[in-house]
Length: 237
Ligand SMILES: NC(=O)c1ccc[n+]([C@@H]2O[C@H](COP(=O)([O-])OP(=O)(O)OC[C@H]3O[C@@H](n4cnc5c(N)ncnc54)[C@H](OP(=O)(O)O)[C@@H]3O)[C@@H](O)[C@H]2O)c1
Image (cartoon, rainbow, N blue to C red; front, top):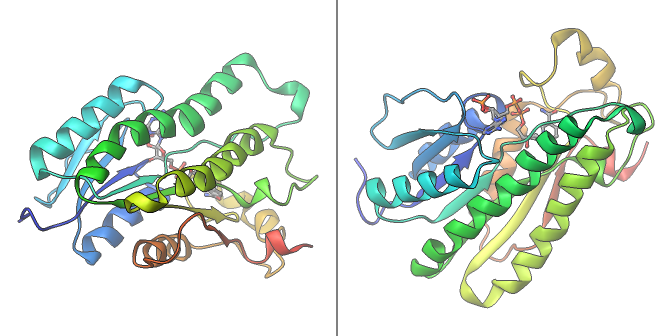
């Protein structure tokens, strides 16, 4: 059961894929977890509180932060993992695509992080991790996806900006920038094509990303870092 000394992590996009594995990873580290997504189910674990909601809606951020403080009394870490990926040629993006991708990938991060920061400061510091995408640093003509770069690129810059803004107040801010990872985001039949996009010739595993986030969580001298976990994608082709 949680105690006032137990650290508390909020993890978004926690119903499946990388987010669900991050919940397990932070529990193994000893944190209590507030796990959120639109469809997330209640957890058996008393130290995992689930909160349903659309992360693009500021009201979800309000409820997630309030629930964390009410149940566990503190917030130490926010992992902004919820995200969507819509790949299509630039002129085929619709207004709805734009609203969806910016709503989840940008507004969702803004609303939750802004509401959580005062609680991190109240603990004397904390950690924010943003999950971006390696395509930001290595655009690939085989995967046209400017909305991913527009949103996650902003997130990478904001990671550095926030890291510097809060450096003297104990909050570290980092990002993990994945290559293509085997999650429900990608249909099985696309895996061979996606594997070939990486210099190492394979897709990432969910555990590759979780390990990177947990490294950052336990690395007190690391802040403002964009940690590429991408099988060499950002290095070149
Ligand atoms: N998989 C990859 O190849 C890859 C590559 C680079 C970066 N990433 C990034 O890694 C992160 C996790 O990706 P993933 O592959 O694990 O994704 P995923 O399997 O598609 O899961 C996405 C998660 O986000 C939640 N979500 C989606 N829309 C939401 C909304 N409007 N409000 C709240 N939650 C929402 C989903 O839950 P609900 O449906 O319950 O809401 C789900 O838990 C994302 O930020 C993604 O951009 C992934």
